[in-house]
Length: 115
Length: 115
Image 1: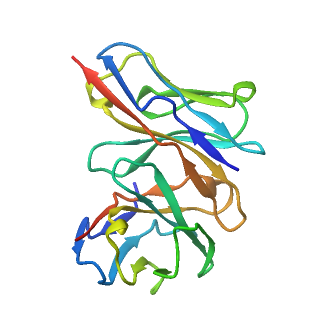
Image 2: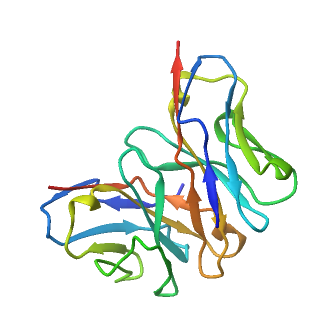
């Protein structure tokens, strides 16, 4: 069964450094998403991406964040200058066109630890 | 505004006992509702979804959920819990967009299963 993959599984970085989290969505999917989950809290929407542009973003997704689909298969989340409060599990998700767009498939997540 | 409430932070049940996890939503239109399960260190796995039609939906692993519009609820049930069901359970509502759908998650219910 096709699945969303994410790399790395765990990233440790120092405050102020840039990080790039990578995701490979399911191949025929057209909608892509990033969510985050701070330890012990709910999963929160960050951004959705469709047709090579951001379609919606939350207030969490400020200028420090950016997303890109550089090569038609990868979908990346970049945090330009990490802060301690960026420490969280980051989930990538994708969904297919049509009614199936409501069914999002999630990757296993990348745990980001900012020290 | 869209929101999801899971009133029970933590539930403990005995193996073989029945289970009901509560979910209440707030959404202006017809909701698209989901239950996801997250095992420790894992991503989010879709258990079941409700789009329309029969208000009792069946999912994987023997789970079912019932949509009750009058109560704005979408409670998850299982008649006989297995030890492997111990996990975190998230209810979510999809906010429809033509360019992708934003999910709003509840805070989750942690399930412990005792022998």
